[in-house]
Image (cartoon, rainbow, N blue to C red; front, side, top):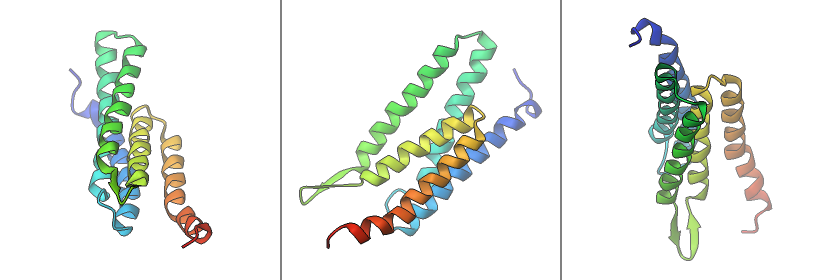
Length: 145
């Protein structure tokens, strides 16, 4: 069993993952979407936690790396169900696709942080925010009203 002090780097990873998820959630909250700051933060936090747990248990029990990747596959599947829950049909049009996609990529950010890929996670968060903000304006300029 690891001591609390030995787990401080993992606590920092959880904090980074939560912060990046919440950063994306702020944009969603400002856009008045149902999934916002807390939801995005929790998705990223949970994804990071699952990876860290799998890695730690894997090292302790000498489990194959492919088993750790099964955890990642489970995260992707679980987020798919969460995303499906936010997609609704309104007047024969699917609503919530961007929210579902945002939750999916936020889970990926949490996974990246869990594996220690901080630069990748930060770049993905920045690209996600750019997609949600800058390209929202582009999309609305080229879409006929």
